[in-house]
Length: 361
Image (cartoon, rainbow, N blue to C red):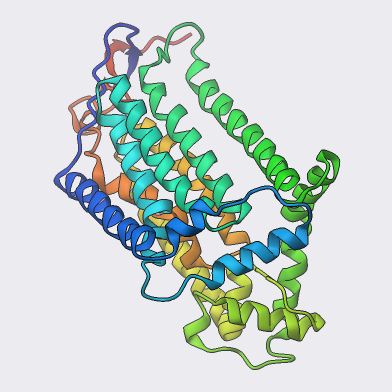
């Protein structure tokens, strides 16, 4: 039996993009530039951004401003393409460049620039969640890929396991602070009220609005059909709210409730199959990658997972869920895994490791 003895000397990170990876970066930048120009220069995006207001005196004012902004956006203006760029392609490009650029200055500059572009789109939506998504995602991109420049293997053998946990705690704490802060500023609440509203939105609102969908379909309205199994629309969301309680509001529900509204138990099953297939494919693609790439993919999956709680499976894909998939197909496999000593050579972080005989305690 043999095991790896991790060296604390010079590291060879070996982040190698595949041909698909280079094409993905070029396509992502071209796609983003085209739809950003279409939406911000020839559509309403720039006006909405320049007139953006984050602080309101009440919830009613904030929701009214959001509704008025949404009414200015029409089909054919490039809004959907700009959304995919902001949620998927720009973050993907940012993390890819953070891994392959050797210059720290260029690496940080690219992350900050692309992050500012994403945030510009999020701000002109006039909603809290997109802003929080952007801040959390790019904080993760700033922190996690740079762990490859840290000496993971000095000191305690448990240090490598602790560092991702520390980053997770930092991101979780940052997420709570951002969420509470946005509630306080956007809705004009005190910090105590904002904290209560934040946890209510996380723990109470999703199951309550979820119940409306199971109440309405098929009891008060026929199932909506196969076209509404994997996605929905604002008209359907407002119709569901009106049929449930007689008032119109954004009764967002999870992908399971959306599947139920489309085709009952069959709709739920189809959503679960799509999600399961996605997870299995991603697991297969990442299996031979370095552990660092898998850690990065995991961290960048967390913000997108929240859209499954109050959105559809398509929301998950187009609002960050495709980033780990793009990373998985863009970076080369860990060559060390196919060597004559599969547990030696480059370690799981893309760093050099030597081999030593296994000694029993």
